[in-house]
Length: 220
Image (cartoon, rainbow, N blue to C red; front, side, top):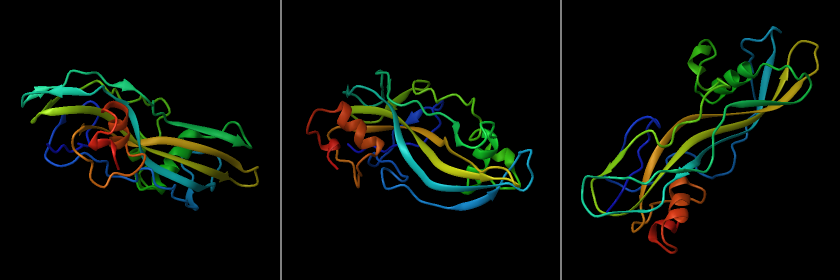
């Protein structure tokens, strides 16, 4: 039986489709290094810029359920996901002013990674909200059109980057920003190898955590 990961909101119902479970973003590859200056938005000092470095965008496993034996088509999975990682939206200012603008920094990062446009700061509202709640990994339900030993998991596409902010003649401010772009859920059949799986991918990690040792799905 082949199972495909579905990219959904954590509040949506995860549906099983034909295919093989696998994540589709950067996985656990090396961080993408970038150095780009983007206009500061919403700051009191006009003309400031953010320079971004060590931009790391990857899928991160946030929860996994115990393996579940499914013996009939259309059965609903009943095992709850245990939380492994709680994503957050935050900015840490490491040097310079301790009163940096966290929202402006996150908006600048959103522009850099293509999640918002410089002339439309509202497009990054969720990404730049430091009060943004973590996804509820157990908010939906999942039915499976097949049989086998199944593991359900949840993940987010997390973004972390270092920055340097310069504005006027003031002392530069450096720091680190983190948020996430999307969240989703996935399913793994323990008896089915995950095609083109890479180390660190949520599907592979979930299989290793919940399937029996040596299960086909736990091998890259």
